[in-house]
Length: 455
Image 1 (cartoon, rainbow, N blue to C red):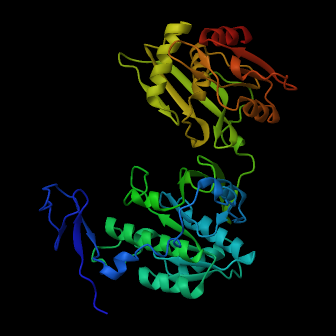
Image 2: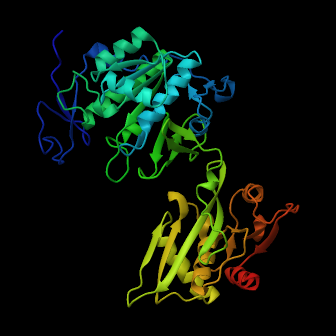
C-alpha cells in the first residue's frame, strides 16, 4: 500500500500547504503549520466511528447511569490517586522527571495485576526486553508473567494490542512512538498527538486500559501538545527529589474520581512501597520544641496531612531577602505585610526564609496562620508549645477565615498526639475533641496574643 504524503495544516485558518513554511500562505500567521495526514473521503466520514456507537437523542434523566467497575492495582497509594483502581477502556497519562520511578511503579503494578489474573502488556520504547527483565529481577519480581514488547512503531503496537487483547497495557513512553503516516521524528508535536489519538481510540473500542508514560520539560510540565492531557481520562504527576527516598504521585485530572488526590511512596531496594502514615515524612523529629517551627494540617484531595512549617528570621541588609520553599513566595510577602499592619510584628529589616518540611508543596491558603506563627516564633526566639498545631486563611484586613473540612483536620491531628490547636472560629468543633484544647480566633492579633500568653 502506497504511503500517504504528508500535508501541513494551519492551526489558525485551516489552510494547507504541501510543504512546511514559516508563514502560512493563507493567513500569513507565523509558525502555525502542523504536519498531518490527508484522509481519503471514505475514512474521513468514519474517522471516529470506533469511539462510540450511533445513538438516538435522549433526555438526560432517562439515561441509565452505572458506576465504572474498578480493578485494584495491588498498590493502595496508586489506587488512591486513580480513584480506586483502573477502569476498563480508561487512558492514563503519567509524567515525571527522569529516574523518578515511573517505569518501576508501573512494572510493579502490572506484575500485581497479572498475578491477580489480568492479561498485561508492557510496551517499551526506551529499553530492550533484557533491560526490563533485569529491572524486574532487581525488584524481586521473580517468575513474573508480564508480557513485554520492545517496539516504537504505532501500527505494530496497535496490531499487537488487537492480537494479544490485554486487559492493561503500558506504553513507555508516548514520546518514542511514531507512525509511518507522518514524516516527522518521534517526539514531535504531530507524532505525539496522532499516536496518542490512535491509542485512545483503540482503548475505547477494545476496552483495554492503556497507561501512557510521558516525558516532562525542564519546567516540570508534560512535554508535547497540551491536547495530550485533554485526550486522556486521567493525568498523574510524579514528584519528589531523586536524592530523597520519598515520591509523591498527584492526580491533576481524573474523569473517574476525585482530582488533587495524592499518593506517597518510598523508594526501596525492592522498588516503590506505599507509605501508610505520610504525615511522619513531613514532620521533623525534634527532641524538644524549637523556635520557628509550627505544624499545620493541610488537605491533599481527601487526605489530611500534617506538615511542619519552618521559618528562619535573621538580620538582613539594606535589601532583605524573602525565600519560600514549598509555599507561594508572593503570598509570603503579603503575610509579612499583614503581620506588621495588624499584629505589630515588623520584619522590614530581616531576612525571612520559609520551608515546608519533606519537599511537599502547599497550595492552599490554610497554611497562612501557621506561616505567621512560625515567623513570629523565630523572630522572638521562643518555641511554640509542644503538641501545637494551627491552620487558617488570613485576609488582608487581618481576619482569620475558615479552612474547608476543619473537623477532619483536627481529628487527624488528635490521632497523631497533638493536644493544642489554634483554628479559625468557624472551624471550632461543636463537640470537644478528647485530649485536645482548641483555641478559636477571629483576628490575627488574637492568635499572636494567645501564642505569647502560651509561651
